[in-house]
Amino acid sequence: MLISRFLNAGNLPQQAQKITWSDEISRIVSLFPEKGVFLTGIEGSDPFVNGVRRNQFKEAFDFYEKAEQRIENIRTIGVKWLRFGPPYSQTHVGNNIYDFSFTDRIHDLCREKGITVMADLLHFGLPEWMHEKNPENPFFQNEFFPELFAQYAKEFARRYKEIKHFTLINEPLITALFSSKWGMWNEKKSSRWNEDREVVIAFRNISRAIILAKQEIEKIWDEEKRDGSPIFIQNDSFEAAYATPRSGRKEEADLFNLRRFAALDLVFGKKDELMKKYLIQQGMPEPEYEWFMKHGNTNNTVLGIDHYPTCVHVYQANRTVNLGPRHPYQLYNIIKVYWDRYQVPLMHTEVNAWPRYAKMICQKTYDVIVQLRKEGYPILGMGWYGDEYQAGWHHALCGPRGYEESPVGLSYKGTIQPVGKLFSRLSQQGLPAFDMDMVSLAKELAVN
Image (tube, rainbow, N blue to C red; front, side, top):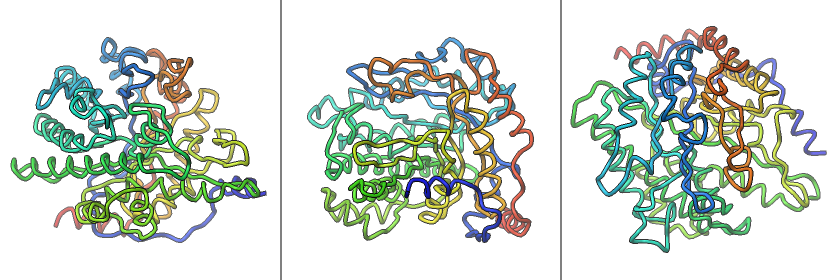
């Protein structure tokens, strides 16, 4: 049956045709370590769930109290790159009012430890004050959010002059779906599988916020005449859906496989007639779509790969099955799908797994990245998310188990785990070098 054929596609090929790079890809590759970036992250999500503002800094091995210990553990493992950002709702506390006090402390610690920060500015949550004057359209339905967020990004970039790498809004697809399609977080909008008007509003607002924030940060670089350029690591969840034969859900799976690209297409200004038709049918005015095609771009951009085994969805007649770590790993195939659509530099930014499968998934992820780099795909590094255990993520922060510990990190309550030791060895080993002709071109472009 189809699912068996699909799952059998998870094995890596012995040979594949190598790809070529554009000059822009070569230039960006030259800005990163030749053996790749190995990174982790501090979980700082703050969505509004079941009437409660979540604070993941506090919930999982309290980062406010244990920041020094956690950052020292990251250094001990050998990780030199950290995705970190304060909970947005705690930092952007009012219109043109910001509280960077805790963020200052963490950036000082990272500087002392020789850890490069990738700023992670918005992780699923928006502050309530932002829609006090617009209560009927809160959170990601709020059309005023993009401009307000862009001002925050501007202030952040102005304050932290040493930071050059930015994830402006984490996982636009998941941010929109959980809040505006599946009814779990924030505005808690939900709809039938083929009714996407509210999630398209969220895609529009999130994508506009990213573009405006990017413009503001680029202005800071120009105004202050900073060296080089900022790099925007726009991560998203790399997903796929498949319908089993006779399930009657092929159209639903096809829509999911189009919808997964909506935010990235808008952010990157990717023209696609099928996407345009979908967005306009779901309520986006055509002039607004054209605004995204004009202002969206992939300049100074790296596409971040967030992919967990559960990101593959099999649509059966009466249920949807999310694949797990015991199924053949689909990362290799899915990366190629996203590469074919966007063809920008890539960086693997997130994966984790249940403790019994963690080392297996970590090694498989590394092996996939090695294979793709050998084929010429410009994958700049690998991430394990995050540094510590998480709270509630196996249940999407919802329900009676929404605070349950998920010991998926490199460490567990301060003790480095087997997957942390493996990740340390892999980071020391590094990734294989790219083809020498490509590297030579990258270095030539960097000089010129």
